[in-house]
Length: 486
Ligand SMILES: C[S@@+](CC[C@H](N)C(=O)[O-])C[C@H]1O[C@@H](n2cnc3c(N)ncnc32)[C@H](O)[C@@H]1O
Ligand SMILES: [Zn+2]
Image 1: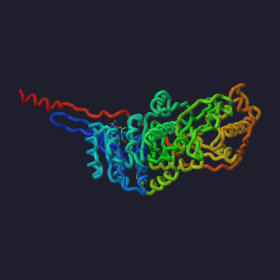
Image 2: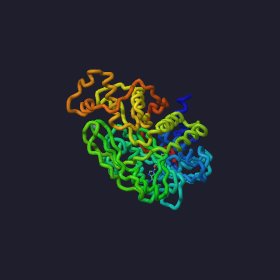
Image 3: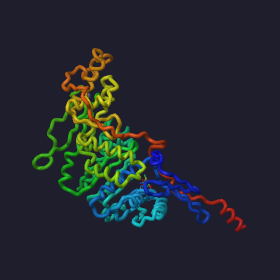
Image 4: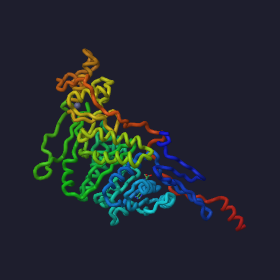
């Protein structure tokens, strides 16, 4: 039963392809025979993105509360699937613009709108940038491109005014992975390799979006940020507000990251003073206070909240009351609960990989229970990060993190705690330094056991572009035409 709920239903009949997702029945491939030719049209569909679309329905539905009925733009629509789902699964909708540049999409969106008996979808076959430059105010814009969103940002933010902007980027190699040159060229951030690459990718993307907004006299408020392994998805409210635009000075900053022990410092560019925001005058850290190694720079990035907890609590209520039909219901419930559970530490950007950090001191197998006991016995807050397994968010300083690991190692390894540790290495420095924070591992910790991570299904990952239109000369018809001529 659970598996059935996870899988979208694929239907194939005479070469035509259909899928069932949410409350929609969608044709993704059509075949038409006309004038001795067979025309095959196929559009992009990726089942691995069902969670992206379910989450989008839920976010837009939540955003629509206490507002006038929404005008939504599904700017890169492919089959029209999102548009049809928005029309069927969100109540407070006035009209939806389903747009795609490809001719194959035009025909399929039209079929799908009719197939689902939808009345309020307008179909467009334009370059999304041109459409967004028209004088239409969209309450919601969904951007779901192949790869990066960058080419669409300017025009999308231009047509947003107190609107919800939903962005997918499938270029996770650029935002989270090894392609740091392209990251700098496209997103303007010098990224360094780090354990919490998903959060860093989201913060890089949010920085770029915020700067585009700033240039147009607008600002952003992130409502929810999500990482789907091969893609990133953010939902931001775009507002025209001078005070919020000025606040950006304190919402952007650099991360100074220790290349040896992964301790880090967050450094905002600006700080609030009596008369608005001014340049941060605090000293810039030069080297790691824990192990003495040099810092690497990572930035600029968005360093303010990436989720709005009140909005997410409303999403949770709507999920349980209106969207129990979602194929990814359990996964979304787990992620949203995870975000709420980390609300006490969500204002602290970035996270620590405790397994990695412990391995730096050549020790392994600190259990989750011991990690929580260590931090909570010292009065620090800690929560498991919802973006990647093994990561923890905390308000504890770098020194306390290593003191906790060090104390644990001394307790387990006794006299041998320095065995196999070479002198003059960062690990040696840390293990030999004075312990300021002494945790109590017998402390009874409190932590949530909400399931936030699920294994990926077979075929999970990005999908290549669809073959959009194929015209085949039909042999039968050709032969009969030939015979007539003879
Ligand atoms: C990843 S697919 C969209 C998938 C769809 N949103 C879904 O959830 O199934 C990207 C679509 O963008 C369209 N596209 C690419 N560049 C475009 C442009 N400049 N303007 C409009 N559509 C464009 C492509 O034809 C393709 O159908
Ligand atoms: Zn260090």
